[in-house]
Image (cartoon, rainbow, N blue to C red; front, side):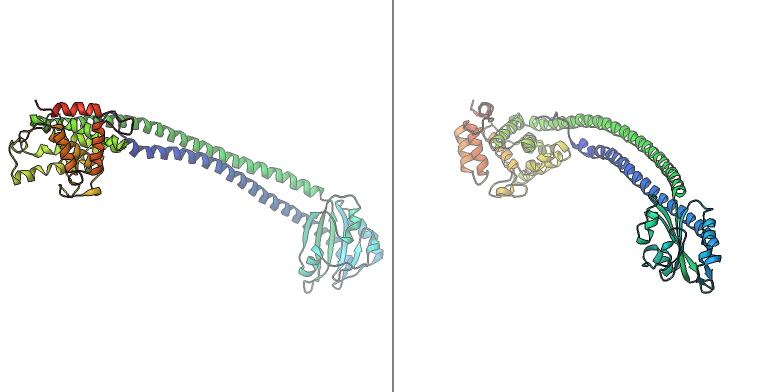
Length: 463
């Protein structure tokens, strides 16, 4: 039974590295996609933040400019002794002064109690009191300016809504008491936001374009880096796969050579004793037949085949004088002979392909009643393959002429097996052997009984 299939030992040890490289390539692709998503989110977020800041800055600049102008025009005429005082006869001149800023739509002057003190548009509203809410209430209570672009929607803004502006720039600024810096009133300024909105839109486009360009350049650079890394990993993977294939092939050849060397050593054992020539091959064939009858297959069947072939290789350490002695062995000689299963297991253990056969070789002389050697195992603690090889070995020994005994006839050998069933031999193995011998196996693949009978009984029949 020779080993001509490539071993998976080297492939199994290197395949994870190849798999790791493939996984790295996949992770690089995932990283590239994730980076694109992150950069996209980052670009949108950054552009939104910058656009919001820009809009706030433009509105603040417009608020400061309009507040400064309106305050410069109105304060000298409307604020006296830190009190908002309105002189109706000055209204025309104030309106003319305010018209110099064409973007100004409406200016309202509020007292701190919510009374509209003056306005340049729809002056019938002057003197009415309104609820202090929204930005106006905030300005009066906190003495802080505010501005925003929105649709005028409060009750006191009905006139402004009727002017046809979709949105207006609304500016709220406190009129401060110069003595204690408190708000004694407030300006409410409505202005056309076209100029501010155009400036916001233009700068927003510039921001989005710049951010998009920067992030696109970053992504292109990242993609180029990932692509270079991917190519490098692919080259490494291809090189590693090629080296793995070469190494696997070389290992298979080396393993085959090693196995052939073991077979040669095993043949040497048979050659040392002319009476046992062909013994190992016959034990292998008998053991395989029994194993198949028991439904054993795959790696376990291979292990039994190897164990059958190499079960006596440990006899290399047994002196010829003992191995070929025609008389009964002395106690010391028998002790040396009993070492061959353990010695054989040590020899075979050095070859990876035969590793599964090691315990079968080591225990093939154990007995079902626990009186065997080398470890005195008994019953089901004996590996099944070892019990199979042990029976095959005993059968061939009984049916083959040896210097110290003649070959038993078939009925004599069968009687020996039956007599020692459950003591020396495993009952299930004995039963399977007889099914093979009689050709009554239940499985159709058991086609060996005739070959087995031919091979064995040709050696066992008396001359």
